[in-house]
Amino acid sequence: MDVHEYQAKELLASFGVPIPKGAVAFSPDQAVYAATELGGWHWAVKAQIHAGARGKAGGIRLCKTYNEVRDAAKDLLGKRLVTHQTGPEGKPVQRVYIETADPFERELYLGFVLDRKAERVRVIASQRGGMDIEEIAATDPEALLQVVVEPAVGLQQFEARELAFKLGLNIKQVGGAVKTIMSAYRAFRDCDATMLEINPLVVTKDDRVLALDAKMSFDDNALFRRRAIADMHDPSQSDPREAQAAEHNLNYIGLDGEIGCIVNGAGLAMATMDMIKHAGGEPANFLDVGGGASPQRVATAFRLVLSDPNVKAILVNIFAGINRCDWIAQGVIQAAQEVQITVPLVVRLAGTNVEAGKAILEKSGLDLITADTLTEAAEKAVQAVKGTRAAA
Image 1 (cartoon, rainbow, N blue to C red):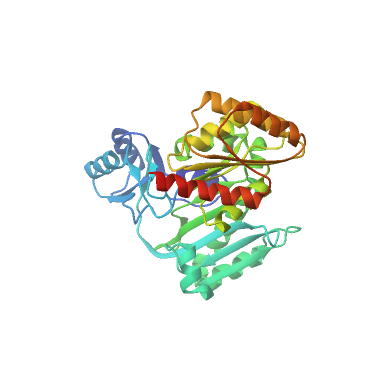
Image 2 (image 1 turned 90 degrees about the vertical axis):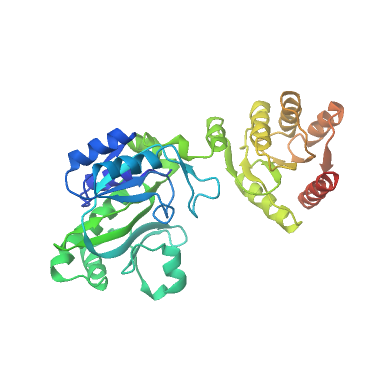
């Protein structure tokens, strides 16, 4: 789960990370009021979306007067901000963050990620702040400083101090940087985060070290014990299909292809997507209906897949263990009764009650394509898409 910048900063500040003064606003008038309350003569008006590269897309405005603050908020609120991380559809801006824009001398990068391969927390820092970490890694990988945290003892003060000196900070700045690094690590660890990025981490003229921006992502599986963080979820920033899928305990991720996938099991879903690619097609989604999918959940899965206008065919691939093929077959029939299936439907069933499932589908009279193997199913789905294109 992702949160907005202002929410990430609130969490960081609660752990002692220094941040500039700021306030969230939902209207132009609130934005002006926030600026007057914050004081100062320069403010940044920041669009709050779950994506980076906002500055390059015009999502961050520097203002010198209250009228400029009002105009910036009015222009940003209600629009869809498109960055290279959002895709062409963009993300809706429903709130802005007003922040004092104090001058600074240097921009640094500081990040914490959960390295699943190493099974450790990895701290990443760089003197080249303000840039995407992917860009730094591609153009100058030696500029990345990294520390792998030993979980038995956690991040140590001397490790943070070494990072601070390698970032080129002077004696006055090192103390503040060490405090920031250690506090950010505690926030990452104690909030069950999977990613924390402070970019840029700035050094001011009076030697303060501030988190000028912040992004945090959290482990969904740990949210049951982090209710305050779970309440920060903003549904407007998610694909509405993914939100609907979550309500029915379905795992759905929309993609850009033409073949909709309905599969049981995350591993089999990934294999199905790979096989579609191998056969020359493009998957339109990842969808795992789970191990105990009822006919109702399968029907819901069909509605989700068919809500994507790019879908030209559907591939149902079920290898039933805990699940049952006859349940899936009933779900397919229920979906056909509730939702008009206007695209070719390829079904491959295997496992528990497979013969009963096939018999149910045969008796249903549905116009569908059956397959015995995953390879055959993927090839037939790809051919069905090509046939749809030819007919069009």
